[in-house]
Length: 399
Image 1 (cartoon, rainbow, N blue to C red):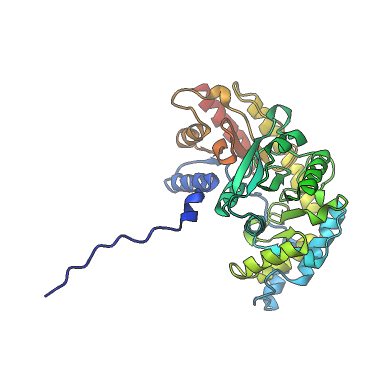
Image 2 (cartoon, rainbow, N blue to C red; image 1 turned 45 degrees about the vertical axis):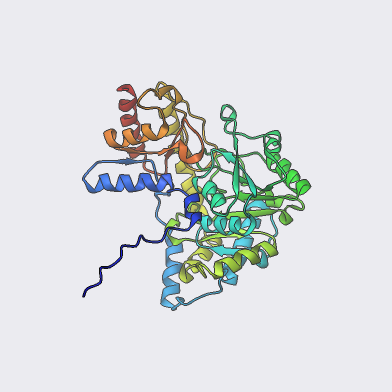
């Protein structure tokens, strides 16, 4: 006699998965890909990715590594020559003095930040997070069991912060402060004086300062600055860096962390049980990037400046839009509050309708902790910028 099979529901997901959301940037990419597959003609301002090819000397270094069969496991935290190259490049740019033991090579800057937050933030800890913030900061903190303490930056003064704004957010549970300069999504560049003041707060309170430097070299005025160069900073500061944007190496997945040895040790232990080493031949390419000609970086920055001027002037010319001029990175972050209305109350609704009806891909401000903005990546051609601006003008005029 046959026994009827029991219907058993699949086990639930781990509770920590409820603490993170689908990245809004990823969601817009997925929707854009669906429309593109259906034949839609899209203008894409969504992806935070250089449209330049990886420079030839970097690619050739990877080819040479492959020919030499440099394809096996490496040390979990990266090969020594790459660690040394990271230290030398950061010293040349910012005047720091990191040693090999204070470096961890990771699979992109995001991986460095994830490892760092996982190693430092415990359940109930608070992390001060200025808004607008990069989309993954918030979810990394909550995944680790922490609580983001969001501080709204002053948009009227270029998305700036003051020490007083940070101090008001402090509590006995504060574990760390995250600063991202140049900023994704706003393009704001925080002044050295603010970093110095926040560092003093961190040293006084015994908390960590996590500095995301993924756009370190993409600033339009002045020289790159790292808080890690301040006297006594290295005992309290963790730097997350990346080669992805600087050298148009997004798919190569090479980032790094600079931190005190105990923190690097904890992050290395975590990495040993998750991803293990970064891609072997990509590490050889990274050495070529850091130690080879740097004119490619200057060339990209010059083109980004030209595109910034084009898109900012175009956005400002649209009635109802306000746009702070970005001082770094390659994002414009206009305020569209004056254009929101019944049926179009949120940036998400605005962004979705702009995509469906006019084929323009943007990322809504909710992803970055603000309620009246869209992010436009101008890491695209001037032709696409002009096409996208015209479509945006038409969309806004039809509202």
